[in-house]
Amino acid sequence: MAASEHDIPRAARLADLLDSKFELFGVRFGLDPIIGLVPVLGDTITLVMGLSIVRDAWKHRVRKAIIFRMLLNLGVDWLVGQIPVVGDLTDFFIRPNARNAKLLRREHEAGRLRNRA
Image (tube, rainbow, N blue to C red):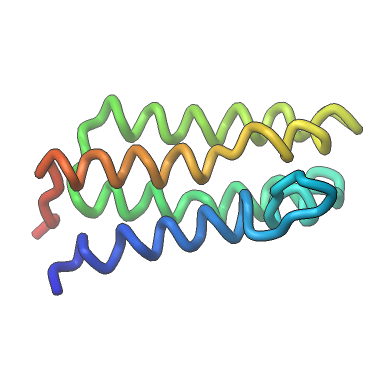
């Protein structure tokens, strides 16, 4: 199995865990909004966890524009997460990790992933 074939499902599993693993009253959510309840530190922890998807994209030489978009997704989530209450609520809807896993999967499907030497 090629490295990208291992990294794509792993990125999807991480995105699911952080963004949509659980459901309560018809609302899907992951660990991101739960961990994010801890002021500043919680959002920083989920940011670092989400960076592993970006690391995989970097490892496979994904285009710089896509890497930038992934970092922007995480950065916006982190910044909004710094706003008390509003940031906690938006964690249920922004889902940057799912977006980033989708971007990585699209690059893989388009045949644009290459391993760094």
